[in-house]
Length: 566
Image (tube, one colour):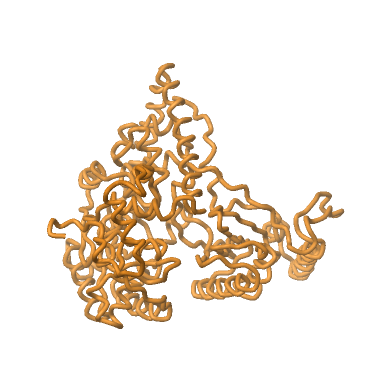
C-alpha cells in the first residue's frame, strides 16, 4: 500500500483457513486456473458491489470486480444482474435506432424547439433563496459500534455477517468492502474483516441524539433515514446574522461530534438534490458548500457525472452513456435528443438534473412531487413458512411505529416480495378503512404474501392517506428503463381467484367474504351520512374506493408517447 492504492490482499496475509484459498489467489495472479486461461467476463461485469462509495476512491477496482465476479457467477444474483443488463441493452438499442431514424429524417430540429421551450420553463422555476444542509452521518452503523468498542476503530469492520452486511467502516472500504455486499465476498476482499451484529436499539438511540441537535438549527428538519437529514437553515442564518453557511456547517459538525461522539458530513446548496450530492464530496467529517447562484450551479453540473445524480443508477447510467450523455451538462446540451427518446416525465427529470434544479421549499410545499406512501422492508436469508410469518409481523410492527410517529393512517396496502431468483413481485389491495394498526396491516399483508416459497426480502407499503397526507420519497430513474414485473392481483390465499359479484356485475379478486365486507363498510358509511346530512358530492368522495393505484407511480415513465413538435 506504499503507492497509496489498496491492492488485493496477498496470500500470505490471508488466514490459513484452507490451502485452496491461497491456491486460487496464486492462480488468479498468474492469470490461469489449473492450466486454463481465466474467465475474462469480469472485465465487463458491473453490479452494485463494484460501485464506489465514500472512502473507496483508492481501491483497486479491477481486483474488486474480479473477486465479485468469480464468487457470484452462476448465482441467482448474478443471473438477475445479467437479466437487467440484457434489458438495458435492448432498451439502448431501441433508442439508438430511434436516434438514427430521427437524424436521417431531419426530425430532431423539431424536438430541439420543444426542448428549448421546456428548458426555459424549467429555468423559470429555479429558486436560489434557500440554504439547504444535507447532514449525512459517516458510516453510521459502523461508527456506533466503534463508539461502544474503540478497538474496532483501527481495524476493518462491517455490520452484519457472512450472509449480508449493511455497512462497513472506512478501514474496510479501502479493500472494496461496502454495504449490501454478501459477507463471504467481503472476506475474500479483506480476510481480516471483523463482523458486528446489527443493534438497531443502539442506532435509534444515537439517531435521536443527533436529531435533537439538528432541531436546534431547524425545528422542521426532514429526516430521510436514521443517518441523514435535510435542514433549511435560511432562517437560522438570518437570526444569527450570518451571510454565508460555512461557519454554521462547521458549527453543526462540531456540535454533533461533541455531544454524540459521531462525525457527519454536510452538503450545502440551494436545494435538497444538490445538497445531497455535495455531502458525499468531502467525506468523512467534511463539508462542501455550493454557492447559491445560477452560474455556480451550472458550473457544478458541467463536470458532474450523471451517476452522481440521486435516482440515477447503473442501468440509467449505461443507457445515457450509450447515447453519449455522460455528464449532467450533456443532458441540457442534448435536450432535444432527451425529449425525443424519453417519456415526458423521464425527460423532465433528466433535464431538471442537468440544470441543477431540485426541491427547495418546505417539505409540505413540495408534497405534491413526492411519492404518496410509507414503507418498511427487510432483507434476510431465504425464509418461508413460520419464519417468514414472524418477519412479516416484525415489519408491520415497525411500520405501525413509523406511521404513528407521523400521525398517518392509510388504506392501500402493498406487499413487496423478492425470491431467491432476485425477481421482485408485488401484490396490493385497497382496504375499506384507514388504519395504522400493525394487527390490521398484518391481517391483510398475510393474505397477499406467498409463504410457500423461499423469499429473501419482504416489504409492506401503505398509501392512500387519510386527509391526503404525504410521505416524501425518492423515485429512481433506473426503474424507468427496466421492464416492469407484472403486478399480481390481490388474491387471498384462501378461496382461490375471487368470484363474480352480482352487485358490482364483474369478477373481483378478493374472496367473497372480503368483498362483502367492503360492501358492508359502504352501506354503514351511508347510514352515518344519512344521519349527519353530509352532502352528496362529499359522500361520493369519501366512499371506500375499489380503484387500483399504480405502485410507485412508475408506469407513467415507461411508455414513451409521441410528443407534438413545435
